Image 1 (cartoon, rainbow, N blue to C red):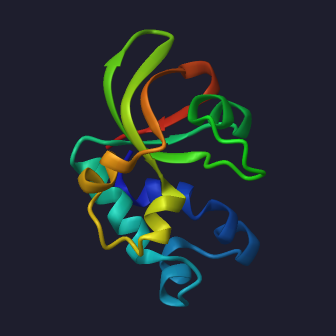
Image 2: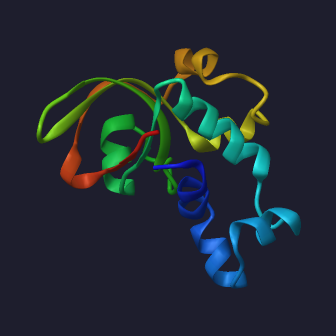
Image 3: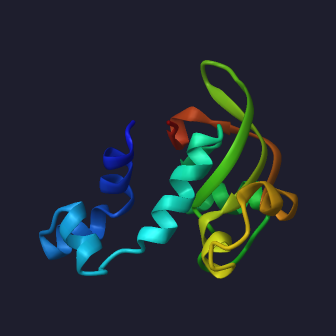
Length: 128
């Protein structure tokens, strides 16, 4: 996946609602360019962007919030045909709440996922 494809995925809903390209949405400030750049930088450093259903996030994070995090930047250290082992991960909403000032390696110490296996059949993984 290249950077343009990643941005198209990340901004997908906004692009469809406004019938815009990535460039148009960025120029009109309909999307958070800084956030996309920070996430992409994490991918360049070997991390993965993971999406999972809310029920799985609740189960793996132990969060019973009405809106558990479903998007994560993760450090995957092992992988089989059916699952990935996430050593640590931080929810994208945690990155947003920290204004993207802190680098992911510092945030991974305060992660929402730690030493868990995630079934590949239930998640989407994006890597550079």
